[in-house]
Image (cartoon, rainbow, N blue to C red; front, side, top):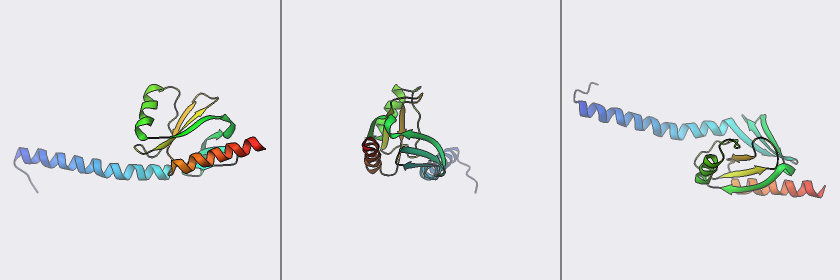
Length: 133
């Protein structure tokens, strides 16, 4: 198919670019969900690559604060603390969990588990269980 009219050619190209962006908006987050996984253990939490290989483990006793945040709050935190932040997420626009650690180079760790409220409750239960031991 050939488009001889320059205005139609630009409109067609713009439509193709927008379609590509729309497909990427759906496909990329789905791929990241396969890439990064989170697990709550009896000692704390672990962020895993491909849901198998541990990337980082955070001990429950090392967590000073844990809370659910919105996607916009995550961006604000990243803007305010660019050098003390380790972003480990796979859902860039949805709610997530913000962890402040007591020690370490990266003290602020935003993550994006599938169900943030349940995840926070499980980590808090893990912390309470560790204190009772």
